[in-house]
Length: 417
Ligand SMILES: Cc1ncc(COP(=O)(O)O)c(C=O)c1O
Image 1 (cartoon, rainbow, N blue to C red):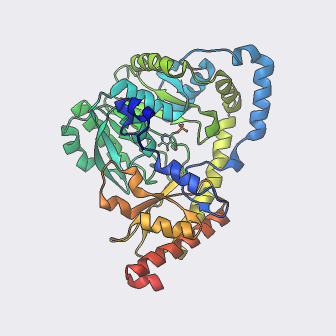
Image 2 (cartoon, rainbow, N blue to C red):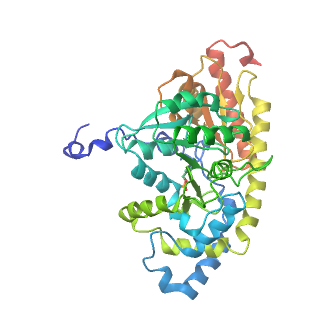
Image 3 (spheres, protein in one colour):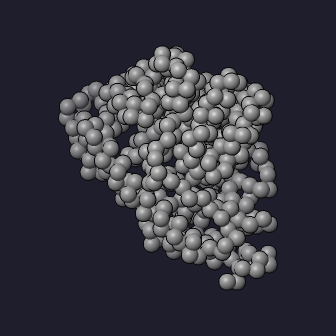
């Protein structure tokens, strides 16, 4: 409905739609519904006691500083700790390369503000993180997408898309949201070399990299870029902007994340962040530093890995047990999500209606694509971090009932099994 207000909204708001995920979460607030839809960390693993102690210490030792305005770049000891931690993964950043943001979501918004002119084309994965599309679309972005398979972004399909001159590539190399897949090492090298060849920068979004439950850690694109192209001169010449967050390793309510980029890019982002929120909450940064320091964060991440591995395995086991053989799913080596593919002819929106009737919910796959492709409606995303293993098992059992009903309606033979 048009109201006097809707005529006043700026043009940039016209393509902004309410998030399918948020709308859906509203639907599933009914306690009867098992929601495998959201992307929430398990509340049981929040280190509440540690936070209580850290809050007290910060207020006791640095009260006035913690409650005061502070620098836009972020709390220096926290940036130092981030620089030290990321060095373990070959990301050799100095504090001047690190900007603290209010969540990675703000980082995506600031990058949009920095790089996107109306009509600029961005190269994204198909499927990709919905929140990034929301952040970039406001700035007038258009998209070209490249398929993802079991080994992440299909780099063999990349060159044609790169020739269309995208402004940047947005890539999720580890346990992709929503696909749960990881970019293979060989493809990381190809991607970085192609990006360099065509002069297209990479935005590497890595919220889940530390949450690996099996296999070896793979080098981040930002490190491959430096090593392959012998950019040993710090980050002055690097072609990758790297993002990560404390949302999945400490607590999302902190709204604390960071960008690693060449110092020149950080300086420009700082100017933009000033206009957005002056700086990220001083108190939160100081508390997070207090919690993370002296190896506590590393120990805590080990605990999270253990809990989430068990939940992932519970979901994989239940899928194998209850789902018909025509349905396929990914086997994520880490992260929070797995991705289900329905047989040709099935529609995830129809399935969602049937699933909600069975009191279970997921996110329909087409929310994560930039094109209105019917193929996208064969997929959906499941989250395994939030619910306990027995709840996951029950959720998958209910979902399997809905899947079989839909298959029967479409006359698939094995649905009656
Ligand atoms: C790929 C990806 N990027 C960014 C974010 C936003 O994270 P934050 O809580 O740091 O804003 C998420 C959150 O789920 C995500 O999955």
